[in-house]
Image (cartoon, rainbow, N blue to C red; front, side, top):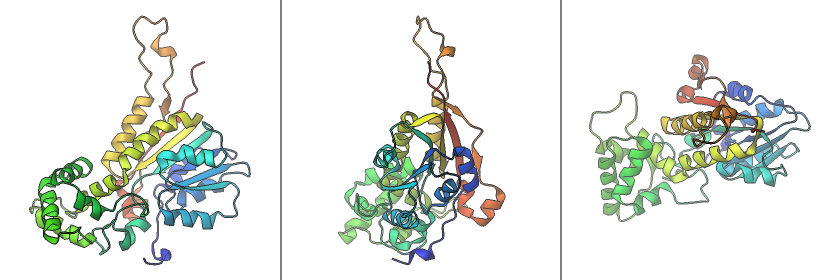
Length: 320
């Protein structure tokens, strides 16, 4: 593994995301996807002595970074695990359940994870075919591909990558595994298989392995399931006027977030015959502004921000 210092991380929508949290100096905030702490640092700069920040990440390297950086800051609690279990992290930090002022999620893979070839996330660099955000849990991408059926692989490539050549790619993967009688070993081995299995009808400017690597990574790390569970738990954890800020990087994530926030911002429809009009029952949340994207200036500095979409919602006060 290469030294951590070699891997730079440009925090996407840094100012916009923290501004959207509407920081209160004495508030409690959760950075559910710490990465390398860009958002956390900005949040802390706006917190007073009574404020609290709970940082969460699956990745042990990210957690080690946070522990080293904030070892002497009593306002910060560090917890390793999925952001879907942020409420557990909050309780472990000694914060009362349901007393959170803001939750931030910066979804997807971080730059240090992508740039470190040994993590197995990149189809452009030679490395072990792992893809786990926490290498100490679950099965690697190599093992999953070896143990899964051709149909299971094709279904994942189509569902999470919208890969139109999913069946051809799955067939090539299983054929190679059968030939070797052992799992695929490296990222480039898989990438080369995908290139060979796909026709020349490719998306301009996009590597043929892009969608497949995305799909496999999402499956290995249960990313969409984590997002769905986290969003629903946020409703019971945020205070009135508490903010939920989510940055997504592909359409599947954004669709989940968009539909959730839309549904939570609608007035619930009551059964007919009840002596209470729908208008008297407030929606759980309200949308704050429209979906935001990175500015041209940010994209020019950090091309990975091009696909980022940020959505914000705020909790309404419960009906009295």
